[in-house]
Length: 323
Image 1 (cartoon, helix red, strand yellow):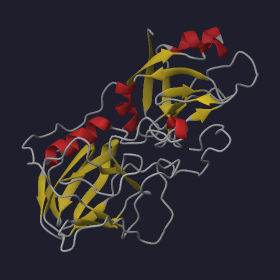
Image 2 (spheres, rainbow, N blue to C red):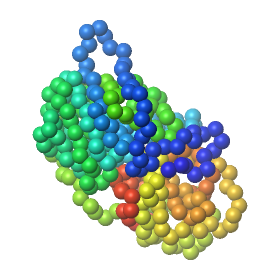
Image 3 (spheres, rainbow, N blue to C red):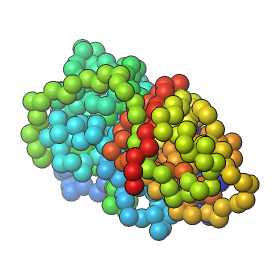
């Protein structure tokens, strides 16, 4: 999805579409300086899948520098993955769009898969989803296609230990800050395990009610009153061009009152921006920090994990809540 009307000087690199395939590139190795004789594990990507990125809790507080928050789209799934393998909540994991990821680690490690439901195997043997799994050195961990939800999260004991940028290891697909989406044969450092794996088991996701709570403003006065009135309870389909930058929604257009131009202004996570065609775009974690179309409202941050797991064609309902 190309972000609507980026402000002058902002990044305009075209991100990977929801179901697109990253371009082939030379393998990369993100190695941090290690003491002599260090035996810290290293992860090698056998197959990266449609799009796999390194994500943690993100880098809030840098919008004034033109840098969005980034971080895992499904923060709850990230927390679960880290909990299962004994990591601190700040550790970085892998966010895997649609599955298809395969990797090995050159030391014995503990891994866990959460978020979107996918079959997991270790060295060709079925392994449980949503539980800590012990993996021997050089055994291949493989994720099948995600069958419920959209994005799976792979936690690894010790966390993905790439060098942080502005306090985060997250890869931002819009600005290019942090590690790029993974490619086949890439290698990543894994930090030393510091905690004990959990015996907990995460319940698999099930299709449920998909509702997003929306607070109107700051530009609801730019829209036709009847369009605003019809928003409460309106249902939209998820567009195929949705990605980490934003969720493109397709349905009844939200009509503008006039055709005047709005100067570019700051954007926030969860903002619902409406371009002239009236089809709203809900900004997610890699959103541009400025935009030139009016924002009709902001979705509650607690509901954004729902957006992380919505597949193209699935439908979501908006519910207006008080300010």
